[in-house]
Image (cartoon, rainbow, N blue to C red; front, side):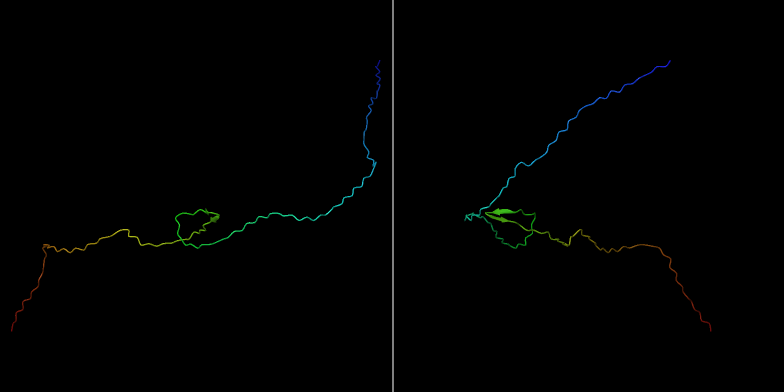
Length: 124
């Protein structure tokens, strides 16, 4: 004999809520803006500065760069440039002394010397 199985399906339900907002105009407001203009005279202190520039030409050779300095309300700014200096100098590196001496020596040497002589006899 076989067994019989019976299935029962039970639905499970859940409620959900949906909440929303709607906007409705209930009143209208009108805003009007006006600008009034009034002219007034005012005094405002204005500050200004000016500078005086004085140049003093120099042509001095310096050992090292100069910094700027202050003399009262005057700022002194040295303006410098580098210049290429090529210098050619005559340098004595040594002295060479040359002394000339003449000497005479007597030398003895044995040498063989040949001499020819001719004797002539006359015959009549």
